[in-house]
Image 1 (cartoon, rainbow, N blue to C red):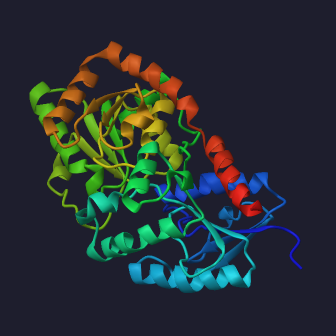
Image 2 (image 1 turned 180 degrees about the horizontal axis):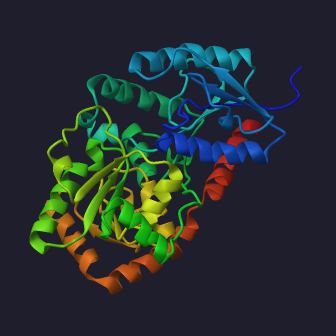
Length: 375
């Protein structure tokens, strides 16, 4: 007879050395929940061999469910057959899915985090098969869920409106950012800039190279900024291409634009803290964790003015129209030329960053899971 509650968590994005947004969100939230609740048995559902560092404590049982879910057909097989069977086999009381995907055919209570529904607004930004899957299944996931978490008030309104979901069924829990992001000493800033930007101040972009991240316009704006100002500032782009649709070959020959690829978290934190400014201008974003990382470092921000970004960054940024290359370039001019303005944004960012914490995110997430576990 079962004596302890059992919660299963979709942990398929916990992949050592390849952590992206979903992976870090899953790790930061579940780590805190699992460690804080030794009275619960947690079952982590992986879709491939896992790294033991993700088995956070003794109350975690790892389960590998095949096949690896990295294609729309495999998504369906994994959630509708593999996950359903595992939920039944292990007598699970509640399933939490941090990436929004659920098992439609299971009767187990289910809570998911839908970070945003960008694919509903810009479907052509993603490949055909993924687009068809997401637009077909996510409205069903939203209706199936016993409760939905999301990461901004913008996303809450968007999900509620688009999928006709009662707002009472959706809770907003902001993301946090790692505490490794903090201001650097002047000596370390000089060292990092010497290593990556030939000693010059730089704008930094952090994130995948994906259409909605608007990297192409950001690069075009930077080239225009350099042409119009002859500034010594450089642009660092930290991240990897997604969907293999981005031809940035000619840009990569520009000595003032540095592509670093994926960075380990400890090195990324130094790169952000040594930047002159974060340039983050997606035209669609559910939250924007790089904004919080920059604010924690006291780095001034050039932010797009669409979707959730103004909600997250508040008064700690200068805003631009992400669809207007000149607007982005003008923001770069302002930040690069006005020391007192950068200092003002730095102080505002450090102050605002205190309201974002993974501890708060995990506590609020647990409150919702716990309410549904007991009801």
